[in-house]
Image (cartoon, rainbow, N blue to C red):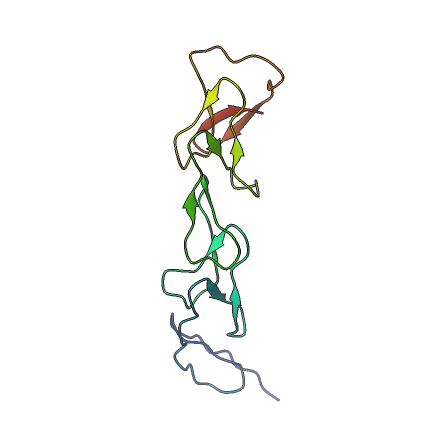
Length: 128
């Protein structure tokens, strides 16, 4: 027996049973396409792709989404979320952030207390 591969263009797929690449129907909002062509609900902190035919994509840092969402929402003011965090978390005492922040920043250089380990973030650093 012989095997052949078919390269399909974006928006099409191949089941490996034939050499055709039929068009893919868009998944419903809040769902992405898994390998094999099945639409599945996006997991927490992911969103539907813009064209709804690819896999769910991660939210940006400073954003969050519940499972099954088509869009991500920004974290509230004085909260933050880095990509490795599952939820937006409150900034520690003496730290602030704008809405949609991936890090908290020190207010007026008065940051002291139990939060004294520096962790590098995408947009700077925060104390955790």
